[in-house]
Length: 486
Ligand SMILES: N[C@@H](CCC(=O)N[C@@H](CS)C(=O)NCC(=O)O)C(=O)O
Image 1: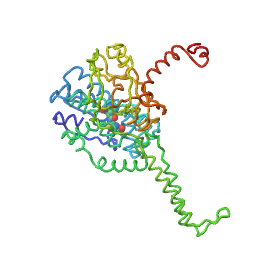
Image 2: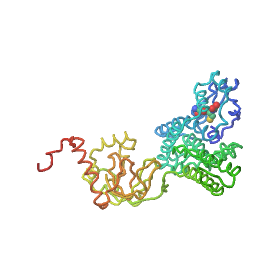
Image 3: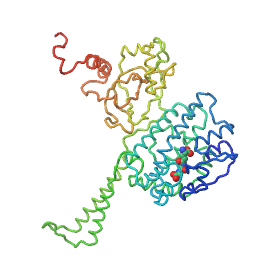
Image 4: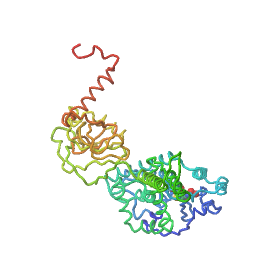
């Protein structure tokens, strides 16, 4: 809200409500917002709570300078971002309390009792109660997953335009950036969202953002939080460690270290264990090394992210593209086609070594199945219809080498030889230097055939398989006597 006010050049008075001191639960504040939440705007005697409502109210009263798209479609898109940013508040709250504020933000019995007695939204009480009881790893992982989808959605849009809604900076950017700011504070693993990072850096350059956000950072943001997040990172208790489900074995190291210290202090020169005489120096060396090794392995485990390759968005490739439906005149070679990038966690990028031409490619180019395919594309959230699916890259199957993988790909690593048959809704096909495909559609290429031979098989084989096995119900029990020639 502060950033929005600064962008609008509006004058306002700040009444800081210290949440740590529970000033949001005083009678005076609860009279203003019975839900006990900040921010609240009071304008001309009107009280407005909820960030989105505050911004909508201000937009109505102060339309200039313009921060709203002009077109109806643009406004709808902006509205969608406001809703999305609002829906992120909840997971953000869980994560901020866990990864940033920590135990210090836990409410005392007395405060919880006060909360339960007051008229604030039951939600707030339940939240603080569950925070006191401790969040489970699964709960946090669920929240992290939601945040990844949020970033993926942003990345998808920022791949195509400079701002979230088209080419102008709007309220959508203002509402979303503050979430990103918080996630950056907690070292959320977001390096792979390169467009989101570029977009964030652009916003950081704005004076209004610097004054409204960085200008309000105090000791907590500048010193306490960076120290806490660094320690959590070393201990493997940061967002990434939780996301990967890494439970660090620090206790083991601590116990061994204690044994080491005790041994140093109390052991006599030579110790006899089960009749064997153990030299003190040897024992101490072994314990010391074990302690060091467990510590190092904990650290290593916590900080080895899955293999991820961050590709520049500006890299281009050669691809065949269909610029419209029709004959060969609609087919062009594009030398500057943007390379696909692994954005989602299950994305795989294949460097195509060979791709085959199937009759369906030529038919699709002429418009065959266009209505049905576009319907299916929309259902799979692929933009399609009225030609927006164009230009398309033809090609349903290929053989090649894995060149990049998303964070959750487990079956393949970079350099693996693979083949694939793409789902029919995919508009960026295999007749290109690189193709992006989801992990489930990829399999290892047989090693005894070449890429060219391999590329001729997947789509044809899958079509034959679906005809004989899925539709024809050919199976182990009934295949006898059904061989060709029998
Ligand atoms: N949906 C509300 C969320 C407001 C909210 O959660 N505010 C937090 C601070 S960012 C708060 O007041 N928390 C009080 C508490 O947890 O005790 C909005 O967008 O305004």
